[in-house]
Image 1: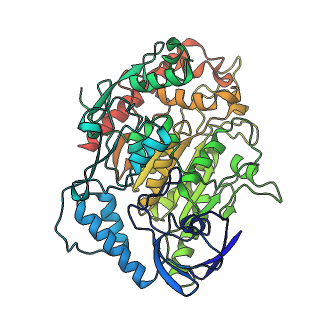
Image 2: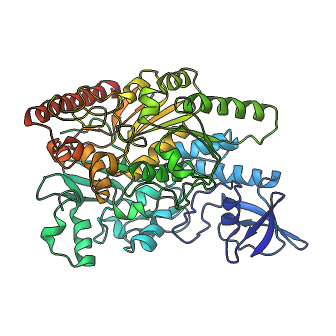
Image 3: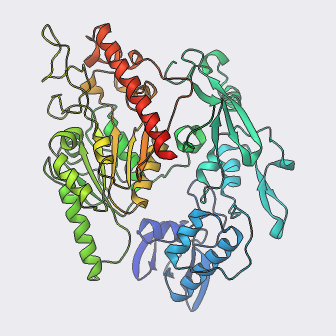
Length: 236
Length: 320
């Protein structure tokens, strides 16, 4: 057990927890974009920046990966932090001006105009989809390509990637809703990953319930005969 | 075939997406619901979506009884138990109090979600005028009706939300009648008629969809109504392990279509391009419908198909 002070409030946290986790448990809000409890912290978005005082030294750190320590004083809403957040949102908004989620965030934190030249991207490069595919799904069907301002998330060689099963976990976690998934004419389509997979119709009732690729993975993992897997959950 | 409206992805994503849902629990274990309780399952997902900064106003009913046997509680958030009829009225008061206290600077200015929870009896029969008043006064409250289609807590008496043909203790099936002789009251449509920002129907069998709908209801400024279809194994006469399947069957047969109405625009959140299941799949597995003769089932089928068609037309008209 570690005692620390966050925004003047004494918080008791467990050893090994991060500042963000301790703050969330105490009900103190720290904005995040690239953080998700199921994957390792990545510190890509820098939005969770807080001011930490340890002994005589005060520094700016990212709350999502900074471990708590005894006697630490954390401030999450000082003027400097607020300016820092505003700048980060402004920069993100300059990179992706068309994202409604970012615009909402900008409104909430009082970012009025963007002073930088605007890009055309719709991805904030937080890497949450990449990490989800790697750590949770375990397939690594997508990854980063390029460096600096040419960096982007894509499938290998920008072609439909074989391991991808179109499970949509990347689309679900995306903090700015930039990965569309659609089901059209018996196919599940993810334009961003250039992939479409035929939907499996239940052999008894004839309704679609998963994709061919998901079925393939299920078969590999469970070793069950295909006939039983081709029945939907309600017909089994 | 073209898609009329883009369907939200949450309705059909599968196994790995579920693992990314919120982990925190604010409606915690240890409550005294029956095995396979649908409303309790729904509440758990609702509280995951609502999060920590929530005040819950709970009308009398199953969910109030099971979670608060003195001196215990299942709620990890502030919770008020109110009378049968006035969950919406008390939630309006909570909203007004929060506004006043924030204006005077007594509590910090941050977003506090207010959730009113009542059963179908507390919504469709007893609490409907309080609900209507709350929606009309435009309070910033999300009202959730968990609909288990009868007064289950007191021993399965029929409510106005009981479906046609269901046998309950006040609408018993026998020589004289075949169960409830009236159609289920469409409370979601009544709420939508108030022109509120958000009205939705949801089911715990589609948890990601439910979580998304609850979050959306809090995002929009103004009142919201969510009609939660909650399977009750005890009252319906099904084995408890079939709760989730029964919820899915109700959606797949079109008996309880999942849709949302955002500022008057209808959208079916899950649609079945290959057609609906016959209602018989759903009805014949339940004790309360076991006595139904084929002609009544046909009558129900006709009504369900017509309602579903009407909903699709509404979607087409309002999305344009």
